Length: 417
Ligand code: AMP
Ligand code: GLY
Image (cartoon, rainbow, N blue to C red; front, side, top):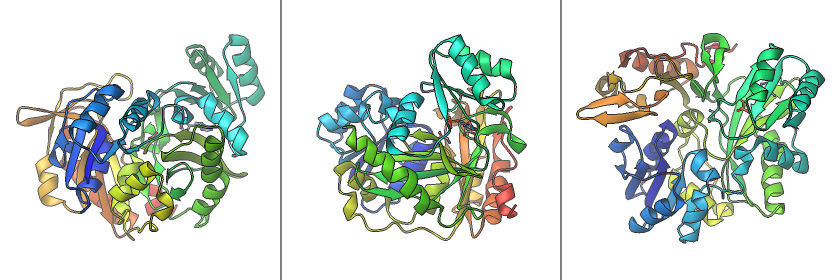
């Protein structure tokens, strides 16, 4: 099978790594990719937002499957262009991807499907904003209605800051604060059949102890030793299947990866957000644990044959990933800094720990930073403590001027706290 992956972050590196290990895959391309992905896939230049260009590339390469990684191309309808060229594609239509592209649309779908989520108001005027802030009280949760790469959400006790963020958005969703731990649960679907993956936990805040601003995600781990073993079944029944059924009922069937961001509150599971693609960095740890070869699972979603998919098989291992981010991430990340130590990790820590590239590019013989999140250092172990130790040992070998990472990824879970 010839597979073309669209995107160039750590999620796409994780996808390409798994696909490169799949015996069914005999040619693997990634467009545009990054310096790390170049080691497992052949890179092609493409504007990932240009559906016609992506479809042309897939046709030229005679791809049997196109996997669209990030949300922006999905929301822009890139999967539709590829489908129109009669090439199987893993990823939802632009219409269905509005589940991620518009928080207000997601709320509407959840209301229709009876999916539990935070109560919310959609506001477009200062008066509506004030009314909503006062209705819920602190802590305030204010979300830009559009795509914002994980940075459009402000959660704060400070009413003035909440109001300022709300007024900086055209359309804003203001909602009830949900307490309790967060879980990311992914499901692969073809629009009818839903196949859940293993849950993971992401660390959204920039700094240790969940301090600092929200980011795209600073680290993740799986499995979740503290979670109720019935969690996946419960979320399947109350969230994932009803959402997929509701989107089909509306005439916008969702195929691809449905990402449920959940809060486990004292009153039960609530959806914080949906995404229409694999999460980053959670994918790095989920795929590290998946034993079933990936390509045929994605192809079954693309072809609408997921009902024929054999049950997924998981490793007993635990996995941890730690994101190394640029100086000044998430505000104004500095790029162009040389990265050292990559060969040391490959020589001394493989196969238990490895570096997935998020924002990197090659500059002559050097690899330099090219984004806010630069690397996602991933490790497996017999338990979270061992995976964590291996991940941080590898992180310590990496040099990147001014970089930052959290030191507490999976720390509580590893200690059964
Ligand atoms: P989102 O982009 O919707 O996932 O929001 C980013 C982060 O903001 C989430 O991972 C949560 O940590 C936090 N957040 C979002 N919505 C809520 C809520 N209703 N209550 C508490 N925290 C929230
Ligand atoms: N890790 C959060 C996300 O992928 O949106």
